[in-house]
Amino acid sequence: DTYLDNATGHLVLRNQANDKDIVLQTDDGSGGTTAYLTLDGAGGRMVANRSFRIADTYGLQLGDGSDFQASFNGNHTFIANNTGILYLTQNVDDGDIHIRSEDGSGGVTNYITLHGGTGEVRLSHYGNVKIKTQPDGIDVTGHIDATTLTTTGNVAVGGNLTVTGTTTTVNTVTMNAQNAVVFEGATADAHET
Image (tube, rainbow, N blue to C red; front, top):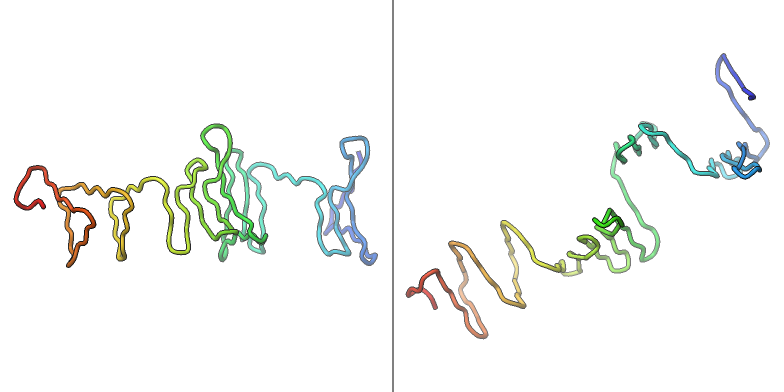
């Protein structure tokens, strides 16, 4: 083995040639050598030429104050932003952002899609789209369970409207019906029409 040791002060490895690099090379796993890390003097950047692995419980830290952190503790992955706003940006024209997870059957599927081509946000259940944002509101596929539903605008019902409960209040000056409106209680009485 060969060692480069320093016991006092800083150890500085410097290349003073204009636009030249410092290249760390080692065996490529196939009998040759290759660059693993390049300090690119012309580009003013560091280039990792192979995968970069960080051991469990240690993380990637960005920013002067470790403002962004990503780590894996051996069981779970953590992404943390500690300063300002966390932006997730897709710059490709009409490109999408997919948030995916396990689909209950050993595969993965989309749960949230930000659709750049249509402007929709799509919420899915096991990959089946249930809610889509639209220019005039949202489209919902399936049924809605809500403990309270309040609307200040118009409600258009294309199918049957069933209302259950101990008290149903209709507070309106005019109610128009193309066929009939039937109010039916538990027992027949004079208030049903």
